[in-house]
Length: 94
Image 1 (cartoon, rainbow, N blue to C red):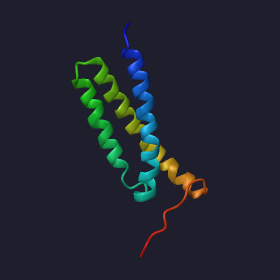
Image 2: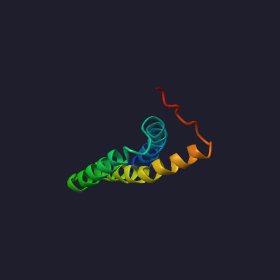
Image 3: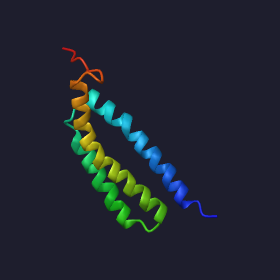
């Protein structure tokens, strides 16, 4: 039996699931101004996936990179969800 596909599927599910609360917390504490962190992380992991020979690790790095890039859009969408009142807005302390 070969478990590579199942491992990739489960790991992809977990990576995407991990990015959801990261985007919410990032927007809550920092707003959208740190979108570039997700972009940098995406570039680094996608390039790393091109350099790694192991198919499992290469695939998971690519999924991580794609999730990082997707999170940039979700960060801006999260800002809109906060404006609509769907998520709490952080009150600025003086």
